[in-house]
Length: 360
Image (cartoon, rainbow, N blue to C red):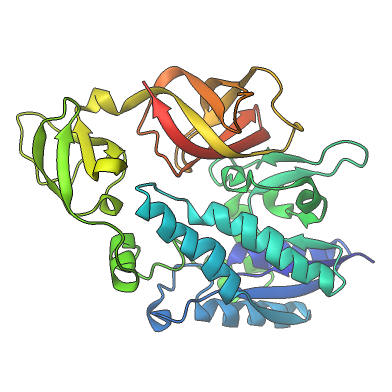
């Protein structure tokens, strides 16, 4: 009998994941990650994942399923790999996606390592995506059947080894069906709200989080238009992101938006809406799933943020460095350094990387 450690967040998705896999005959162990930093722990938003009450909910579901449950203390590695990276990216005037980093470094690396150490064959999560295990070829990742809940964008960092040891049974289900199963099983979490925003930012105010817990992230500097004219003063580049309109403190006869950063001169660059659009981008820190490496030009659909849709693009290998060039069929708005770009062919995840810069 194969053994599976189910990453139980205390929510409905991971709870049903455990139930479905147990029904299929796997030996199930429940595991919840303790990742809270020491500061502000008591103020965590209960809508976030991994709050203190989530551990209680996970243990309650494990008890109902009659499976063992363990709590894994991953606080130190979460601080180092996720929170410290989050802070460092903002200090560089980039906009990170910590959930992608958490999936890559914590769930499917640190927690998977724990799972294998206790004798499990697989780790399983409640993500909405599909994994195809191929014995002789590459393991593949696909979008979920429920496109409204699909989370494949957040999972492009999978290695072949991690895919080999991961199960995601919810890829075949829609959310309503998952809640119905939970209700039928008598799980109190069947109507629990989905987790929201960034788990370690108590009130979803990342600026307040950074200023309350970190110092010297940035200082005030000039706001310039794209011709180099000074329009005002910003309060620190970490407070702004590409495409932002509000909070600039500038009054002109037309709306202005953040279009870029001049980090060397600590300047915020603003312009008209049409100046927020770009023809393409350079991506770094690449990870490939369906291919070994990008050897030649490839037509794909590229998604530049979690809450957007994939659009037609062409990707080009760059022999001189480890970045690739992405050119869109139509210009895209607010391409943001630090966010991820993920490449698809139909429902298949080809791979992805982190946006380094954009070009007009």
